[in-house]
Image (tube, rainbow, N blue to C red):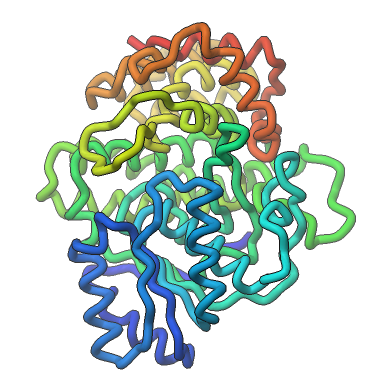
Length: 419
């Protein structure tokens, strides 16, 4: 079980300068994106760095939904300056970019594909020591401050992939709920959907003791190991918080209790899926993001088309959980109950339909786009979406129910329209 150290509480960001001084950091790389560089979370970090005399350089060119090229640009910046510590202030895009920059600056002779997940990259184990990385999440979504995963769009194949290794997880995650108060409504919603799917997928993933063969050496053991007794605790707790607070956090930006709880839920779900893994919603989401045509979401200040990660994940969730519920239906039914379904007279064989209906109602209440068709896809795109899912074996093989290409086609088709 691998977890970053976590510090939580309103205003804890002011301690980051002390943390860096305690680490003996002399040259710090501060990473963020253009939007955030003007907002209170980055200001709070800058004030602390100034107060404790920390020497730093800022890189604010992180791309929202990063690509291999945007990772390479950040890596180039990191290699040039020989930093001895990193600070990432932002959502998953920023934290993941900073993880990659730290990894390749610490392993300067490695080829980019060396550490990228197989079968797209070589998936080599990380054996070099990395510099300390402090993550300050500003969204309540990816849980990236707790995980050893960095995700990006591989443009040449039009597919998302990533790097997964315990070695790249942050040294410390500073979870300051004040930072979520600047999130616009749709960003709260889409990042909350990521938390929802992290919890649901890690709780329903193939159990850890059904995976084989055992790695020949512990260094080859994957970060994503399948559902297990410890990750289950975190996943279920995160799911309960989502059920109670997500709608409130979206509907009222002043609801500090709801936003603070979603910020914690993001870390809890991160601890769950960072060890158990995710499965089909995430595996299928990568081509949904990678093949985007013209969709631009509300509340995202970007100059390129993008499907926000949490949205790309949640749109297939009703179809996916209908499909996976044949295996461990009791877990699917338990999840439906936590999300508000009345299961007193439910039949166990209907678990998938009940969870799917509960999810549809949840999404409908929150004005979520009506399926893949609403974000620009049609049946003609299904073969390309399936082709983009096939290389995602790192997560798809964690589905409790194995799937064929025909199954994936049917799941994409069922996700074209939700309501």
